[in-house]
Length: 299
Image 1: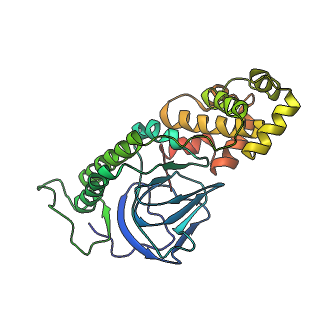
Image 2 (image 1 turned 90 degrees about the horizontal axis):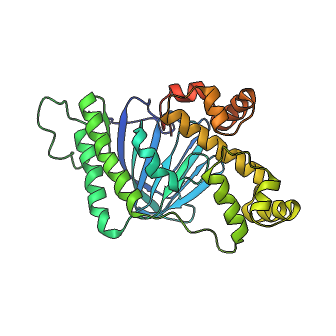
Image 3 (image 1 turned 120 degrees about the horizontal axis):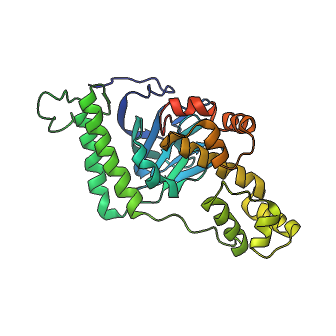
């Protein structure tokens, strides 16, 4: 089933799978101050786009897969100074199995930026998107359509069979791009001791890290370590630790049936009350509501 027109700034409900193929000129932009309830996947085929979610921002060129997670304010559009942006996009509920594939490319605030897929894969990724556009019209009672109408830009998969077929194609895209890319190298000029401390935080955010313990692990005094970390990474060690703990908690809520109290403890928060408050501030909803909306919800 097709969608002739979707509101410019409205994201579709999370139960649907909506696929689009856009070629937008300079000046095109979308802004959702409240984020969305469905995930947004974008894959650039030409020109350049700029996507921002919370405090994270990336620029997308040909072959880049950029994914915006749920519940965080976001903006995206043609990168200033560029003439256009050509891209595929999908709003949907993402499958839990995709989370580990995207996790290495988490830039913060629920924005995942997968580096460009090898050129040899572009044709297969493009074909998978085109299948999604065609399969959105499938009812499950007849063979899937051979192809989408040549002028079709947006399609909505309402039927259960069509949604599952479209999600299977998107799963292929996520796996192909994430498996063939590599996380970006650490920024040039970042001290090896700072990188080591950040790696310790990311590897086990639930541990009782402190400025003193992290400093000791990299053979620096606490004051020197805190100053160096903050200057080079733009946030204090404890702020970085809190962000890592919140991401870890979100993953546990998405992928496990642990109680909110156990998620809080496993993520390193001493007080469930404090956990609820900072999680709500970060994701826009309490932990229980975040889980109820389903994994990887909203773009």
